[in-house]
Length: 243
Image 1 (cartoon, rainbow, N blue to C red):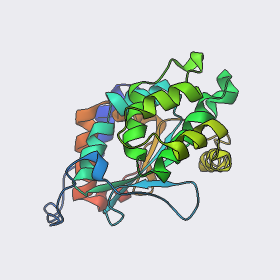
Image 2 (image 1 turned 135 degrees about the vertical axis):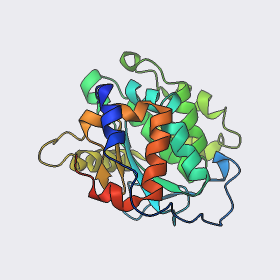
Image 3 (image 1 turned 180 degrees about the vertical axis):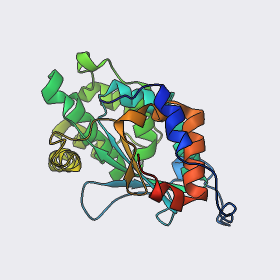
């Protein structure tokens, strides 16, 4: 789990000075009416869950652990609503890499169970809705509250998710291999400097990672909204930004 200082928000926005030509011309694809309409699929690498228009010009990769309280902050009161709007408008697509390291760090199996359940929800075309419900009802990190029973209870809040196939997948950890592979993908993302993974939540936008010292912008919805819009309008400035 990572956080940056509040001062970093202003610094992060300042590096994206508005210069050069005008804004990008508007796309003429219709907006998705709701999050339930967002396309969702498993990428060929077997661990990346892609949500949104696959042709969107902006890609946001998120590294999250379902048990992480700082991820919950991002998803419920931070920048995630702004990201959702960008996906609905087809400006952005989101690639999720789901970690489960907190089970080993804090104890228990809730992260692994939740990642398995999210993979099962993807199989039913309900990843987006279930992902939102899990974070809205996240147990305290130390409690290890993502039990089979609780995960199935929360699935009942997503229309059309509960059924024999989903229930069995949760109870038997059907996607255990996905859970393991996804955690390994998260750890590889940290590289040599962060062998355990980059921390959660971590965001990489158009292949450029938001550094730790600017991480607090993820938790300010207004600032994150502006950041996404600036990157969409002038992606070359983001690419040339040096932190």
